[in-house]
Image (tube, rainbow, N blue to C red):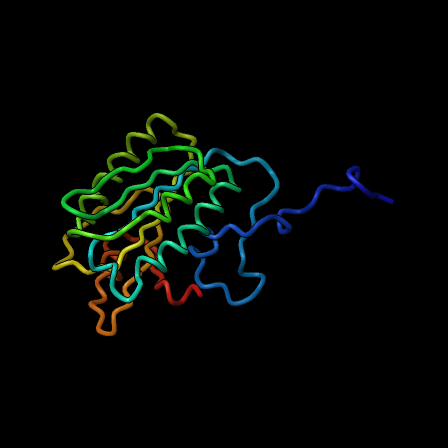
Length: 201
């Protein structure tokens, strides 16, 4: 009989919920749809998160809902010991907040203080992210990369975009009564998985 700490190792299904991989698989409808963090060692992973914090995301609490999701993502990254790169798109230019730091609970104050304002330099952020990921991959070829984009897609037009060389997920945070629906087009251009934030509740 096995008991106490000398018992058999627990299976990965007993680990914490891995929110980003779960969302990449679609909206979970039953317990089996939840992806859980295995209790085994994995290669180093990097999550690059692009947050659209332009003025339009103030409407209908779009950014507030996005911040709630970010808290879950950062907590998941911390549990998986992933590294994070954070890029905000607001004002005149995209701005790097962190580049490859270890995920930690110290990120929560940044989430709480995140505000919206200015224009939508989303495509500048996407371009910078692609270049930075390519350079980092040369330096850390064994590192697993993922991209998460949170945007309301409220742009005048969607240009031709180059897809990332890693799994990517776009969360549409547009919640206005009349929606432009351009976030879905951005996801298509990037060959990214698309989900609306309201479907993740």
